Image 1 (cartoon, rainbow, N blue to C red):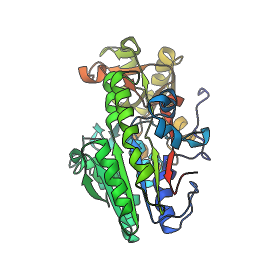
Image 2 (image 1 turned 90 degrees about the horizontal axis):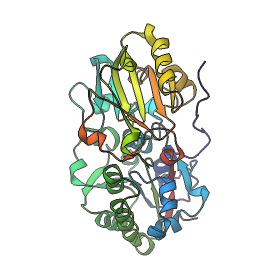
Image 3 (image 1 turned 45 degrees about the vertical axis):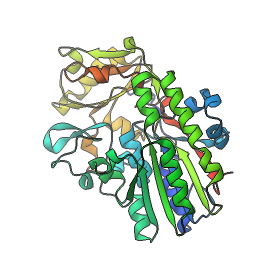
Length: 379
C-alpha cells in the first residue's frame, strides 16, 4: 500500500498562471491571476528565491518585501521543484506531464539513456520534439505583441532556450541592474509588449555557498537595490510581476548521501534520473517494480516518499500526463521529505557533491515562491 502522499493543490495559483496571466492582461484574456488590463507587462524570474527565504531575509530586501507583503503573495512552483520543469511551466502554462520536461535529468526511453535537460541536448533529443507546445512568446508574436527576453548572453542560443523561450527576441544584459533597467525601458516604449527577465545569481550563490551565506545575502541585496527602477520608471499602463522557479534549503555534508556502486538499492535499476532530492529510477525489468519499491522503502521510507510512477501520477505530482511524456518519468520516484539528498557514487562529481543549497522535492521551502507586483499590477 502506498504511503499518504503530498498532492499539489489544483486550485492554487502557480507558475503556470504568471506569464500567461501577464500576457492575458495585454490581450484582454482575464485569467486566474486576475490582474488589471495593461498595454505592456514584464515578468521577472529570480532563480532559487523561495518565499521562506524572502521572509527570513526581509531586512535585506525591503523593496521586494514591500511588493509581496502578505500570504496572498505566495504561489506554488509545481513539481519537481527544479528549474527545467518550472521554467517550462512558466512559459507554456502547462504542467510537466504535458510540456514534457519532467526533471533536471530525464529518461530518454527511445535511446535507452538519461539526458540532462539544461545543457545535455543533442540530435537525438530535439527541443521542439521534447517540448512541442507553443510558448507564451509564440502566442504573443502571433497576436502582434512584441515578445522580449532579457538575460545573459550565454543563454541566448542554448537548446533549453529553444525549448522554453522560443518566439521572443533576445536582448543580452550582464548585471541584474542592467537587466531591470532595460526591462523598464522596454515597458516605456510605445506598443504592446511582454518582457521576461531572468535572474540566476541567487540560485548560483545558494548552490555554491548556501542560502545562509554572505554571498547569497549579497545577491539578494543587489537584486533589491536594482528593483528601485520599478518604483520610479515603469509607466502607469504597464505592470510588473516577480516570482521564482523554486526555493532552496541548505544541506550539510552528512546530509548528502552517497549510495555506493555495489549497494543493493541499485539492484534492478537501469537509469537514475531526476535530481538529488527527487530521484527518478528507471528499471531493467518492469517485473522488478514491487521488489525495488520495497527495498527503497525499507531503507529510505522514513525520510523520503518512495512511490511508483503510477502512484505519483494519481496523486497529481506531474499534472495531467501525456502518453509520450509517460516513459520519461521514472518507474520509481524517491522524493525527499527530510533534509537529505541522494547521490549515485557511479556518477556523482566533486562539483555536485559540494552543492550546499538544494531543491527538487516537496518541502514548503522548495515549492512556495513569492509573487511580487509593481506599477499597474500592484494591489
